[in-house]
Image: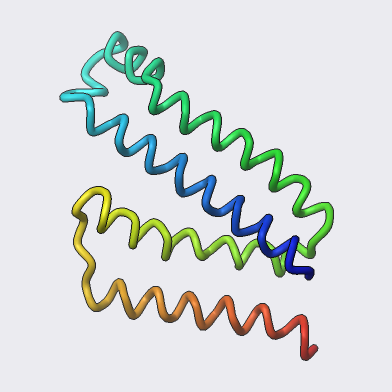
Length: 123
């Protein structure tokens, strides 16, 4: 895998997390987003939800390009960095908790991604 391919996977991951953050923010703007059909439709027409969907769509197109160039068994685990990015982002943007277990989990994810990345080099 080249540096450019890694950067594309990272960009794809950041796009996915950004879309999720927009969805979360859009939901936070509503008092009862799933109270009725009307509130669900209003939610779906929210600029934050639409923006998140657009980013997800772009990420999907980019992902199709990535998997045409990179082994799926290598590219997909790198996307698990989204878990780490989302935990850190949720802590700063949404005041969600950041426990010791979450930090340990993030370190385990990083170790797993490193092992998978190195497996291609030393296999």
